[in-house]
Image (tube, rainbow, N blue to C red; front, side, top):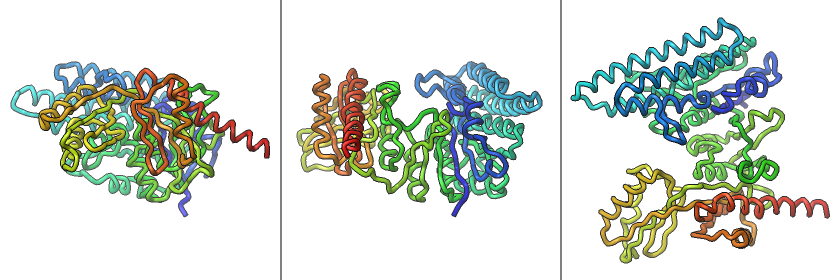
Length: 478
């Protein structure tokens, strides 16, 4: 049986450097206890936004400025240098280590500047199309954030007497486009986990490109594959929060409860709603390899976190978490002559894929297909235009909506849906649609966007808080 764990540290946790060392990397350990752990690190919070574009606001970073043309990308790259060196200044007590960390940043920045300058001059001739090269540029920039955080973490660990090893998976070339699995195997093969602590970049240069294939979830794919390939006893994700029964900011910290235990079905539903415990493709690998996943709060050292296993089912039917999507679009396709005909589904799916719309859920009847989508309004408008052109007899509409879902490893409790609807009705929240799957993992309530927060609070109170209170009452009576 394997002795080691593979642990991923998120960007917000990476930025809380002192806490990270006190609670996770060192965490009161000494000697041999420090080892048999592989750490996969994200970039420090905000760095990937500066390198690419802001994940939420879309504010341009180096990549977005470079794609837009002009010289603004050079200033954006300098801002990255300043931010990384400022981060180093805040972390390092030893001047020698800080200088080493800064030299690493400067070398990588100069390499990126030379590459981007060459491409910029090339496209200035007007005869060259750089579409393929821009994909590579995005990959290079993304990997720099993880290279910086991993390198600095290794230096900080060595200053504390830990035999840490910098495992840089970011470097690659088209002549050496290995698969992700092979790059991981080659990098980790020489290491002795009993006396070395690998700090691995969350980005890995490999065939197909990590950002192109997994978007911002690439570090979790690296983490998952390392755990699977090395046969880890456990995979651990360190986040800035507990995996809770609802967003504490919406329902209140005193009302939200740590889940404690759940299964990969629940993790998949959360990922589908954008509240990722783990990227769905990363979770799939762990589940197939029967590796349990633990989600821990970096800021709560003593708590064991939430354990996610493939075969876990709650002892009694219950809702474990209430979550959702605040901004959803209900794309409705109505065609009177659809009944009994084939081809509509595939055409709609092709349009959605073409324009990058994320399908959260779907329903259909004899002549109507409705997709509940997450995506930009511009992308969805293009989907509507394509479908109207392809099917002139159809009526295609896009309606703003929101979704709140009640999720659990087993929610087969009789009367759960009527109880939820009654609670929402009493709160004055109307339904656009309700979906309850046979698998009994989630119930989805489609509502108006203005009702999102109220619906989360209402359903959490009715399905989680009241259920816990009832359970405590039964236990006291017994």
